[in-house]
Image 1 (cartoon, rainbow, N blue to C red):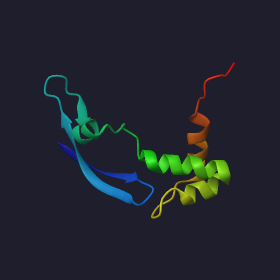
Image 2: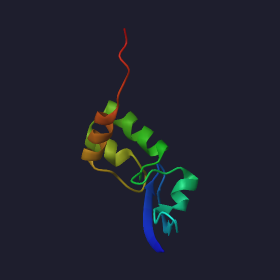
Image 3: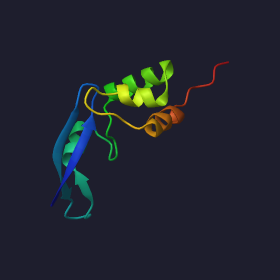
Image 4: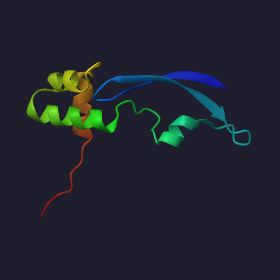
Amino acid sequence: MRTDDKKRITCLETICFEKTLSRNKQTKEGVYLLDRILGIESHEWLTEDAEVKLLEEAVKTSYRKAGKETSLTDQVSWQTVKNKLHKLRFPKQE
């Protein structure tokens, strides 16, 4: 088993914790049980509240300022803000 450090940014603070990689004995597939229990995607490091704050700020100001205002204790890059905005898809209205 392997233990990895994980960091999640919330709008209030950054949460750091360790998670253990477990292996299925039959399939040899590796899985982080904590991710499965909490419903966290494999490369997800922003919580929903931080992402909402990021998007709200990006609409009002710039990508750089949105990255700074995402969390009280940490910030994300302007490139991350841009990527999050450009991934959004809205249904076409008729």
